[in-house]
Length: 188
Image (cartoon, rainbow, N blue to C red; front, top):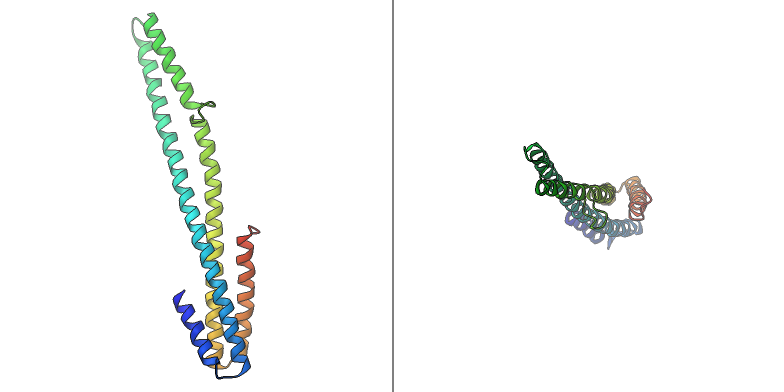
């Protein structure tokens, strides 16, 4: 961004003593630089949201795996207890019942909300939010790239005195700004 801003300042400096067209290009570059700054803010915000959501998704799936492991261990406990010669003993039957109830709670715990079923649902919701933030991030990155190109074209147009370059810069800047606004408003 600093290189683009330097170009904007240089273009404005050169146009101070020149013709009205060069001043118009300087204003265009300033507007493009402002749009670029906003797009970069949006990109950084979306990137932070993506990373935050990605960490939350990873945590949910790690918790899910831990619950699954505990559920499997209790299932193995049930199998071992049922294979004992005195499996019909009431104390062993009580342990088997407790292990099965624990297994069921690990799989689905609507009261506590932390069963594997609930954790999978939470993780899938967070994955959707994360993926949306990633999509927004890329939209802002494309906007940023296009605005940087527009600034370069506008700056070159002043140096080369080629007015079609400034028109192209204005068109690219307008289209990319509208695209950035669409990303910001979740229209894309």
